[in-house]
Length: 167
Image (cartoon, rainbow, N blue to C red; front, side, top):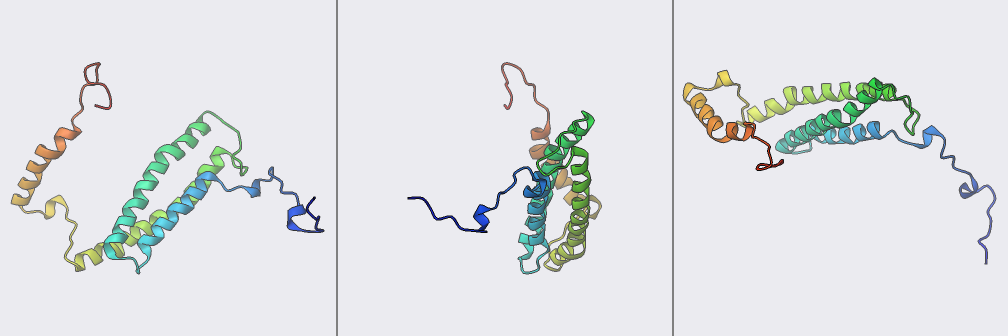
């Protein structure tokens, strides 16, 4: 028994997989996802410390995006790769689009942190201090903590057959 054919149904229309508007650009789609993360930081219904956390997630995501994806696109441009992505953009065009998407997000991130989050933290007695804002005792404590707990982890270690990477 065969299914009944319907005239003018959406199912009868052919979807062209070769049309670039059928696809989302992978990089730009990822940036839209990260914009939603930033929106959580901007949303005043989100609790203050969660907003700060979302700013951190947004920043970390964007750092990784630039290291991996933008770095890859730049290498493609440098190698003069002219292949189009599935949405019809060259690597150079994708970089232009990425910049256009990132600049307003970074401006919003900075404005949200400096004009909203940081003052709200201060009003809740949470202060982000610079080195010069610390007393000499606090500076001594911070230096001692750094030397004992942070610096040893940052010190390069030898990688050899007896100490293979990743340690």
